[in-house]
Image (cartoon, rainbow, N blue to C red; front, side):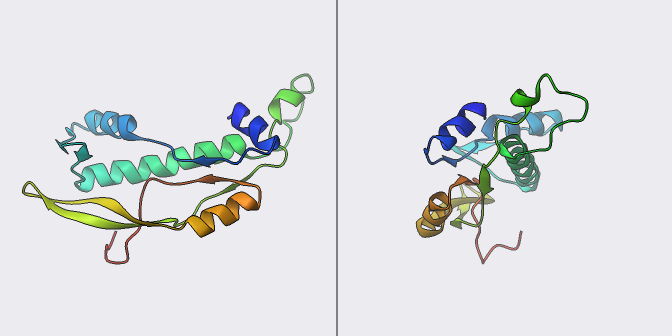
Length: 146
C-alpha cells in the first residue's frame, strides 16, 4: 500500500481489483464446507456467497484504512513520518459492475454471475478526480434479491 500511495502521489492512476479466491476457500474449509467448482467457476451456494461477501467487506475496509490519512498517534514522535504516508489519498468504490446470473450449471442452481456491463465512465470520473478506485469483484443485478 505504501508503494501504491507513493506512485499515486506521482500521478499514476490506480484501479484495484482485490482477489479473494484463496481466502474464500480457506474460510469455507474452516467452517467444514468444501468448495465446489465447475471448470474455473466456484459453485456459489449460500455458504460461499456469505463468505465471499464477508471477505469483500473486510478486504475493502483493510485497503481503505491503509490508504486513508489518519491522525498521528499521541506520544509517538520518532515514527511520525512513517505513520502518515498517505496525506491526500482519496479512495472510491461503487456499483461499477452489472452482472447476470449464470443460472443452472451442470445441475447446480448458483448465484455465480458473469459481468454484463462495466460503468467505465464512472470509473474514469473517479480516477480523473484523483481517487484510487477499488473495484469490488461482486457485480450487482436488479433481478437478484441478495
